[in-house]
Image (cartoon, rainbow, N blue to C red; front, side):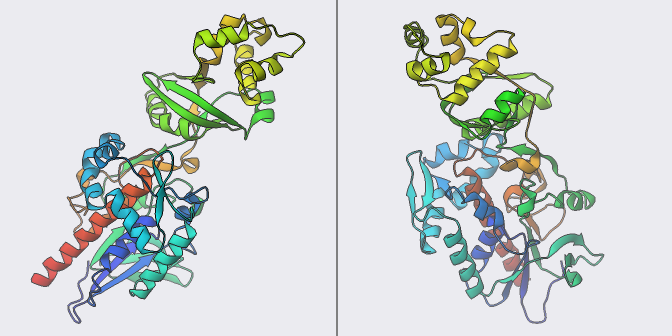
Length: 420
């Protein structure tokens, strides 16, 4: 990167206007250092588009559980992310939101939300603060790598532009929901530059199942509530949504990484679905042995064991797949099926439909400040890094925490430059 020693300024280019890039800009401008010039470059017409999408059903900022347990949610990346989560723990993120005029509350599940329950007021306040601090925001700037002299190349509506920077932070996100801005185009750029990238894979994604045309048309878009899904030794309770091609929803997402990895190893995967996990086999069988009278089987199942139409439809679907009719099942057999519906999985939804992304720049290619070891002055943060996490506030927390580490690393680099 080219240093500007003429006027003593230190130019920082942040590429990516999502939560990681904006948090880094926030940290870099807190000290109001007049020698620092921060510019954010975003390829979309506006900033924070995926952040806003995440808040459509209520912005889940973080989680309230103790930090030692919180860290374990990141699986194999927990050790690598622990320093970042210490640099920006969940309570600090809540304090940050409150300082922007958006106090938070803890929901019944332990998840943390702004009291407004929305992302847009927080983003507007955030952008106002960055503008007041002198951060320059450039939209419709698509990063295209580096020129021969090390300048950053951007494709803009006005043509190609070259930008010199003393430090660069890449915060371009993963490759899920590319229409919101993160399309994974950076993978080829980094790979061509000799920077390793673990292949991107879908995370927190739906599962692909083989529905009959009748079940698909009748029940797609309908929920399966208060269920339990089991894969191996792990059981997750929650809800799922029937889609045209399978299942989505919180309980599904929690198991999707294990399903994805097993399928990637060509291991057949069958989930077990409990439609009434709060009821024992004996209780179900006792209820199902009651006289049905003139009720249809569907009406009987609704009243006897409180099964909703999509759940009853799924029982019929399973029976038909086995070449049987549900009316042929004895009460004990039906009770067993209700809490052990087999779901053979044929795949996971595509990367562009996933909530988040696994894979990315491995931590081994970076130093403790998240600077690329073989390219001094280039930092990486957010979902571009090789980690994944469940939904529940863990995604945003780690995205913004890694941005804090990278921003602090940039400040260390500036101090080292100023000292020479």
